[in-house]
Image (cartoon, rainbow, N blue to C red):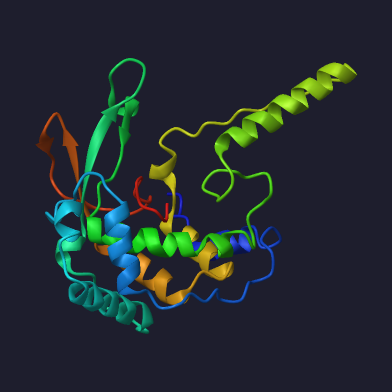
Length: 239
């Protein structure tokens, strides 16, 4: 039986590829204003905990102060306690993709708690600077000032250049089916720590995924809850 992938095995196999370990990237304490501003700016479907953006916008600043203090304390703990149980649920609507109907032609998008999404959105945005310290210049998705079309334009220019020079050009297209489902969390966390991801946020994020209960939703019906053994939630700002 093939052994389950692990960070230790991955690091030993590809130890020559990553750059030397980066120093931990430091972030400022999270604030009540960041929470309230994010609640005003964001919208979308609410999670299974029941909180909706329109309700959060009515909360006084004193509640946001409590929430900011609570989450900052979790980030600062050596061994953070579990997230509040109500926030550790996610529904996964299965959206049909183009092509014949079938299990592999459905796109699973996770709808997480609005409160978690606000926290994750704030911290992920603050980590854009950290990301730029290691991301390759050829990658455009999920970067400030970049978009995936940049890659299309670059490819088109390469094709035009090779056509003008009348020299051979090889173009390789890769598309991993159900890519998110094959992501090994332990390797993701290990790489994040290697590149200096803030320790407190990494521990809190790991804790969240260890306790996250998910339920599939199809045609208005929910399935049985299950815990993830791998993959990240499509729809999470950190994914």
